[in-house]
Length: 160
Image (cartoon, rainbow, N blue to C red):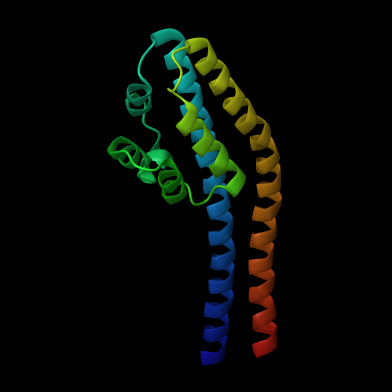
């Protein structure tokens, strides 16, 4: 009886680990979606409102970005590379580099048309790569869940 309970606990814990890995990937996709929305709101704020970048960023809060403490660190100033690296750990290095480039470049020119084109470039990049990442993540999520279940069953067979 104790052996069966141990097998069930081990099997379920390995399955839960697979689910945990897959949920981390899903959260990274949702974070990228919110980053796209933030970039679009910056673009619209520049185009239609002629509002300073800091105000645009702080006016519209996104839950996952806010959870990562980005707004507080952005408002306190500091090195953008450190802020992006600390807040967006689940993003790829390429995405982090693009965000660092965006936030260090935006607001440096007096020409709103250049700023709008810059926003358009980064929004376009994130939207194009988003579809790719969603497809890749969907297959990885399924794989992690299946590996968790199969590993749990394999451990149960070995212990029986």
